[in-house]
Amino acid sequence: MTKLTHLNAAGEASMVDVSHKPTVQRTAVAAGEILLQPATLDLIRSRDVPKGDVLAAARLAGIMAAKKTGDLIPLCHPLPISHCEVNFEFPESRDRIAISASARITAQTGVEMEALTAVTIAALTIYDMCKAVDKTMQITAIRLVSKTKTPL
Image (cartoon, rainbow, N blue to C red; front, side):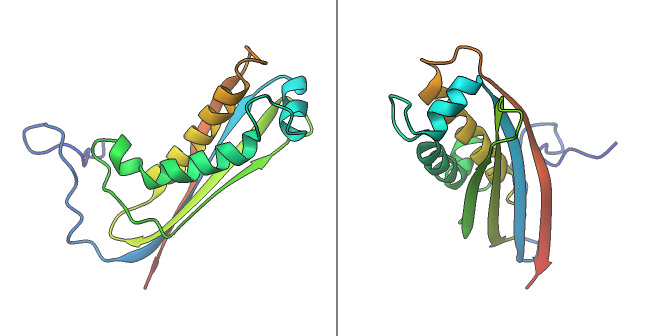
């Protein structure tokens, strides 16, 4: 079994020391979905949700959350993200919005938590903005799709 890196020798929570790692360009992509009613999807796409433009708010919330990941998750390093992007797709099934986020950084540690946070907060923002019109929504399938690192 792989050793957990966030535990010290005494088994206590500890921030990983990355000072010995080389600085490289790192990118992470995450994805997730929010299941909803077709009527809710129609409201979102036509920008007729009473609270405003759902996808614009969700995109900004996701980007802002990625930048604050180190403040939200106790053992994450605070990272100066160089790029974050949040996108939405509408599958033909008309029962969900697929959410993806990518985050990029040049650093000594990965940026996958930031991409995952962006997807999660974008989904929560959609949920919050539409909860008055759709009581059946479900946030699901949040996952890391890929992570890469490229030497400088």
